[in-house]
Image (cartoon, rainbow, N blue to C red; front, side, top):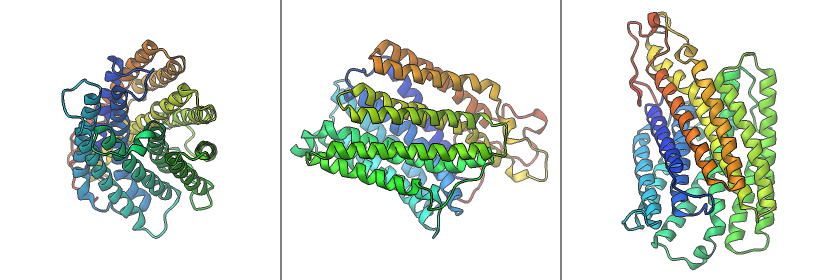
Length: 445
């Protein structure tokens, strides 16, 4: 068990709620996605929520994927501190650009450097753990590819932050800033997060559905993903050079990404049909629903790059990727991961010697199921609001999402505090009562 995974999860949920409250309270507007207020909220959710969620989950699961212990585990706490502090400074810099804070906007450049340091620490831990094994499956390979995309995203992000803050003076970059910003977002959301989520979810879906996992280099995704990222990298270079082929290469990259989604969906469908667990738990159903949002987002993204004048399609596609696919998948898997890790931490010391509850006894799906449904419906409403340009409808949908996330966070807390565990086996002699945001047991990382 990773000592800091729960801390990453706790911080990520706090950032998600703060971002949703900000949107619902009136910050940002659909008419200018690249406005400073919007950029502050987008980074708050993408880095604060999804970034920390992915880092915390990978610290726990990469050692499982690699069948070895986590390398350089002492970097986890400094990385978390650098990421939180860097995100705070970056957000303050965006607010200063928008005239909301009377401070020097150069602070965002410092924030970008701290974020870079934090993510580089995460990359060092994960990459060295994966490559420590001479052979690794499709999951480990996709995580490595995702980390490469993360590295390029960090470089682009720091260049943009320094340019906006006035620290960097590159006229050519400033000229193409508006054109390159979507590629920065695409590398982070598609290149890092989606590729990594696909890689990890292969193992999670197989584990939770008791289904055979498709592994090995013969999986077409192992070829399609590097090709798609290579096309995306080439499109960035061509766009920077103002080459005529930039749009064509971008379309090729997006089509390849859509192909990857199709291949991934086929593999998940095979696992679903071959599963030995006929009655699926709630986290598996929510993961399948998130996959539907990924497919819908991919179709919208293909339409957006084919008709580049329609910005609403691109905005709705990224919204569905962030909230429907990544956030939906994250919230759903947390509903299983948190009880599972809590069960290991609490009852591991007495397993085989005392009667203990099941992992599923730490949750009550009847309480959580309506909130997952509410969340997904509100995401569809939010996407419709973006397509029709309705700010009031978008904020109303965001408040509903906020309520659903808060309710699910309460369910995570109840699982962590053993609230649903049967009283007679809740805390047998020798068991460890877990702290809320960190692991209490002495574990090898």
